[in-house]
Image (spheres, rainbow, N blue to C red):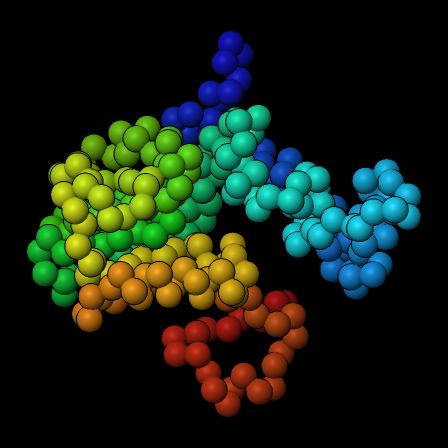
Length: 257
């Protein structure tokens, strides 16, 4: 192969997902015990991993398995954006496309009354990556306007993804990698949207960071702006006898065989 770094280009992303599962994810899983150990024991383990005796320096504080696996104090996404991880970052974008493959696209299409929004209503896809979710919505609701916002590095491969979906109007769809309150081609200065959409994002961050994120959105929202969060809820490994007291509306809990 003359250009192995392009082997996942123009694919459905599943091969990229398998490759990253055997690389980044597997390395991180190998440090699960170290990350879950009590602080005192974890500190000793970290010092040993760093090949130091730990007698004359404070232990580094590792908050996640990825920090341990890759010997970094950066968050995973900051680490991905380092210049030496350019190939990993590109692969991650493909992985997110591949991850959509096991989902039913109609779920997001039918889960919210998008059809009730006025024509040209703006939907801001917060941390929307390459725009996979908004592309599905834009195809189903062509009269709405979609703005995908993410970090600049995260959206750099988005144009190649959008190019494979010619039915999406570029006049109604923008992917944007900068703070919101500036001019956006095709939109001008973006007003408060009709909907903030946050899909597959909140599970990546600690609760306190999610609260900050939501507070920023609330401060920028109009009185009628709606918030749609699409994410996963991890059930307990065993049956919870109390969950029937206050069931989550719409939840369909399933237990393992």
